[in-house]
Length: 282
Image (cartoon, rainbow, N blue to C red; front, side, top):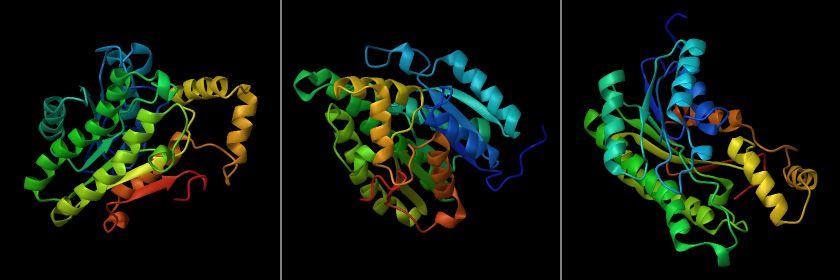
């Protein structure tokens, strides 16, 4: 396929947690690539500890196959990088990789997250709480810092976007660590946006409601059992509280990210944008 000449041609995007098929990270990377951006796909590559089981992360072979697929279908250049978002040195190395391999850094999307450590509060161990905070909140801090360290001296502006959640606005049972980590992102972007605004760098959250990715399917099963409902009852109840009549799909989040990366969103920063079909109006 010929080189992509879309609206983001010449731009470079890093997307963390994007090594699994049918996930939000893939949808975001594919959308930005379709619009012409060069992409760094990133994931942890293999299990590092109990908090990162192979069943819930993007493995190296899957990530490489996904990168080849996106490149072939969009005409954009796609590189891969194994990165642990919990480690600032790993994030800095990925930012440097983007500059070295693709020529710059314009968009940084903090998508990596743990949404599979769900337990009743009284059963949640401190170590499990910390694992969620480390990835979902500290990982985004590390990403913002690593991206800004490249973007500020480059003096070309930039876009930094965290994939937060409806759980950044509302509480849910069995998700104390998850909700706390996502709520923390609201304060993080408000602060970072103030400091980085003079450098023409916007910092925002996208807050989707439930999306049935691979992780989402696991959540459906978990929560329906916890609530004593059949899967059909649980999904019907979910649809019933969403004004648009359906849960989110990955493209909904990817479209919001693409908008926030666009020139049309140059004056939008410090925001936590709901993408919830009207379920989360706050």
